[in-house]
Image (cartoon, rainbow, N blue to C red):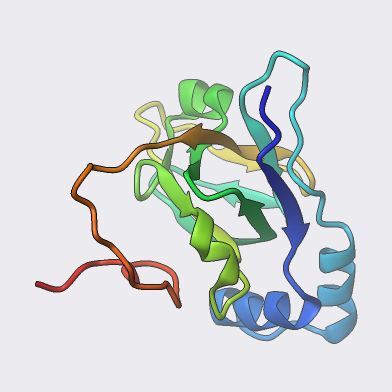
Length: 172
């Protein structure tokens, strides 16, 4: 196995900013506790491809509900690699938990963005069986898999990223 990446927490200040943008203001002590308990993604077994991301708070999603989750996590990886994020397969199978962008793509240069490369997840309970999803704080809800990629022989991209969603769209 190639060792090509490392997970970190974003700074407490970045986490507070992104939490407030998502959920509104929260007491300083409450946010500090949430931040301190954030667990870095891990593989469950030596044969697992996916790194489990853990919920920073208790999540209850009724059928059709959506939530945007600031994970508090960033990923530094070598150039030529991407982190692909998916719902944990058991949640997708049992509840039809869906990522709103189907697959989260975390590029290697996202780590250096103004928001410290803070990884978010926006998930929806897309159940057809009227099931409510209940994910406890600290439970796995998403998995990330590092994948190597290639580029075309005539690729001439030279721009650098500074931002999240849509920041790498080439304007012709």
